[in-house]
Amino acid sequence: MKAGKAQSGAFAVEKTIRAGKAKLVILEETASEATKARYEQLCASHGVPLLMTETVGRAIGKTSRIVMAVTDESFRSMIEHATCSTDGKRG
Image 1 (cartoon, one colour):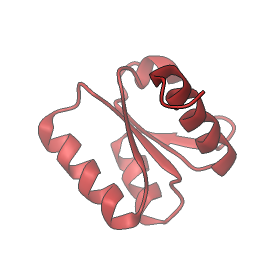
Image 2 (tube, helix red, strand yellow):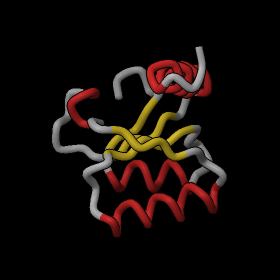
Image 3 (cartoon, one colour):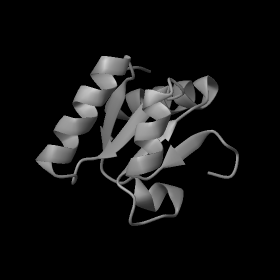
């Protein structure tokens, strides 16, 4: 991503998680069960929150992408706050 606050695509995301730079991973709900299991395990083992959403690629302008990693703490906080607000979990 241009601002350097996120990475998208399977290889870049996995590399970012393993390097300890991922603050949040966002995975599209339409991902296969194997892909979901892989990211659930990878995120859990590295202590990275995993957020499931309807559209990742469209939101970042790359429709073929189903996963992204946020590398900036402020950006992570903003996304989680917005997501919780729309879910009705927080006000």
